[in-house]
Length: 249
Ligand code: OAD
Image (cartoon, rainbow, N blue to C red; front, side):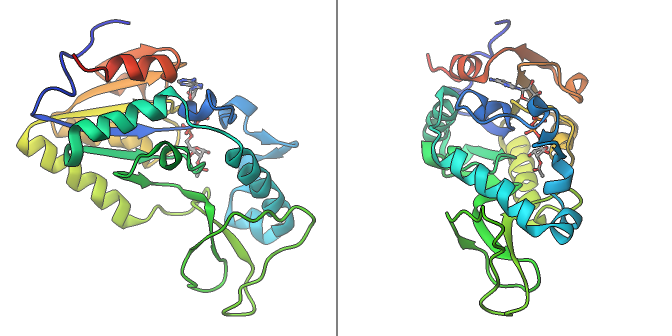
């Protein structure tokens, strides 16, 4: 599998930032976005994952997310998720996971030092008011659109970041602080896994990491759109590559 960095987890200077994408959940049975050609039941994903899509047809959007809630609930974490839990245990505060996945599988596996950049399938908030986001496992598949108890006007919506929406700036700040501190105190390693590098700002993290002097790795089944920015590229399945890369001596 090419050069393996000597004792990544055993090196006391290592500060490891991992960015994961849909490819990490593929081996758990959750289809990737580009894997379904960006289509769901002939709707473009942007149509069912955007504020304008929700305004146009909230029941359709809830059907899409209810199906995804159901699918994710029935899936189990795989060896890639587990390898990241072990890395967190080995590195403690020198580890951070930033995921674009909303399926909750990292949490189910046991990851805690984790930022869900694109939110979570299992949270709900209001489209019309600032009702605090809450845990929610419910499915709305029969054309019913849940309403907000607080403002009584707004429709409830999934707590995920949609196309055209901004990420929580506190999340980006936390990721940036981790990188700055890692670069200052030790050996900063940035590892992107199972992500096509097509969606920003996540796809831009590698550039920031490079500017800070990080060692950068990409583990992906196919070449990524931003692949040229990485020092190392290992092509294959994350369930095999990640445990190998993060194995301890
Ligand atoms: P994509 O579906 O764009 O890319 C998944 C990547 O994983 C592809 O490049 C595949 O080659 C790769 N892949 C598939 N199976 C794999 C495996 N078993 N092991 C390793 N790699 C594998 O998913 P993301 O990059 O996560 O945004 O997409 C980024 C964002 O765009 C998503 O979070 C979502 C999407 O539209 C929102 O929903 C806001």
